[in-house]
Length: 166
Image (cartoon, rainbow, N blue to C red; front, side, top):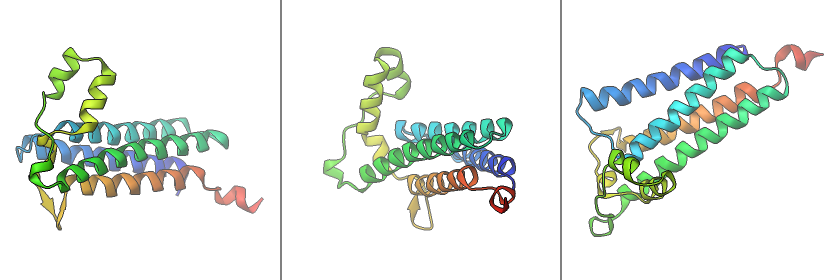
């Protein structure tokens, strides 16, 4: 598989994940918490990087830059998903209290404060509304982000077959 095709496949996978997230929100009526929205942003960023890498068709060092960007976006998404899994694993009396909505915080707080408050978590992030095969949605996002990151690094950092023979 060419690097360009692999990057397009990665972008398609990200689009499919986001499509399911919106399906869960608007059809299954599962309202996303602030950490869920940050996970969506991470998957979106990963998808955009895959798409730009596919369109650019970089050579040599450019592919390593895309591999690093994909790994970084995936790592950030994994971190947010892991944080939500941690909050969901807390006993009920240790769960943080519910805070203001993300929309409200973005209107009244500086971006740095919004990031700190969201990553601190809130009570709504501890609620588990959905499970598949025993895993809550952030668990599946963590697995998907790890797979996408590994795939993106492999697809962009590998030596192409024609270059390896030379």
